[in-house]
Length: 287
Image (cartoon, rainbow, N blue to C red):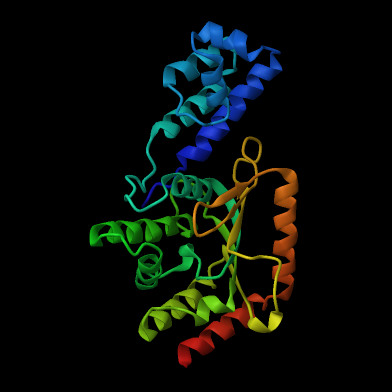
């Protein structure tokens, strides 16, 4: 079973708690940095999750803040997990490292994901479909790099497995645009296999799959996006990922998240319900 911890999100979570502990004591950043014998800018980067913290620094900070035993144990566990590379590393040379690291970390640490997608979402792809999609996205990738990209894409699906060992299975609510089922460079047999996979996954209790038909008209969404709801609600926060041809965009302010929740609500209201969507998919398998 693939372990699915997300180091980027864990670093952000750890930093959030350390900053909260400092704030509870009314300690200025400069004062704590001087005690730790590091620069204020480094301490700031630790608190914002921008750097991988040293175990020693985290331990010393917890001592300065006189954190209770339970907090120390939890934060030190996060510090250890934050230093472990994600299972998807090393990256291939064709991948935008920051995008992949952030996205998979969010996925691994989320309680639920709400996604509108114009291709079939990666969490529901077959290996053959994934290869077709990725070959188009990364035409310069070598055969070895492509194999690694496909391996990463399929490995991500461990988060929705009901027997996931390291955390509760991700609750996935995906709305696929009808174009995801109609437009592909893959062979008809590959698409037929993909449709069967979608129908199978739609029966999972933690997967809600809907189709937005062409007849629903245009939506406010101009590209694929996901809303990640945190599993650790006290220390993490909702984040929106919006895909683009270049680097992805990430939004986490209350206003931005609220805007995408509104867009999502509109999409769901116009999509076929889950049972209608399953029947729609099944008709494509038979054609």
